[in-house]
Length: 215
Image (tube, rainbow, N blue to C red; front, side):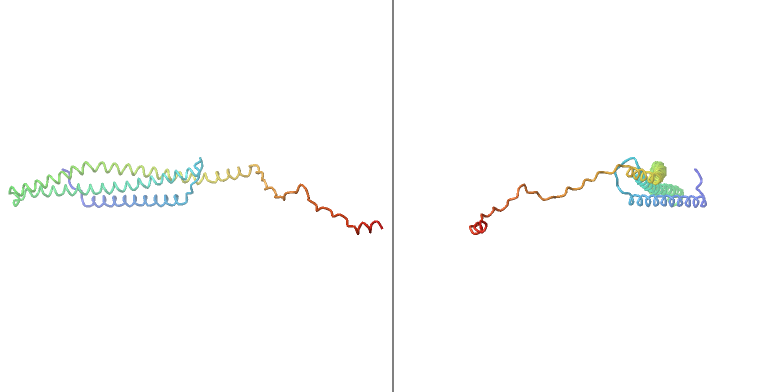
């Protein structure tokens, strides 16, 4: 049986565990903030091989990193609870084993009750020992994937920022070198020209006018 850890060792372990938890919370918070900022300023466009595609990829990578960070925190908390249950069950089983040696618990009924409690705590110890490696491995895997996705997201953001001016310059150059489009003006609306003009009929000369002309 291994000796119990000293108080100094427990304090150092607790400080290291608290520092790791604070770092995980900090990384998760920063990742969520960057993801929210990039998602807010992103404007949907047609997906081409340009910086818009990199911006979308960076947002997806940051979202995945944020989710992995949450899962890492979840499994870390679950592992801490299992570890606490393991230590608590081991301590109680040792205390119950010491009680069996005391004279006041030498009767049959007391020993049966103490042995039943010892078996219950040993069962919890076995369950905790079986679960703890799985939770620790899951937390470690999410920790690795969180860092990989976070670094990939940052690189995608930097690449999109560097690529954006070149895409803007190329589009402006293409617009400047394009031939001018022919502008068709709308045809003027002219009034319809009449094909024939109807003149009023000439009046026949009167008798007085004829006599005057003959004179």
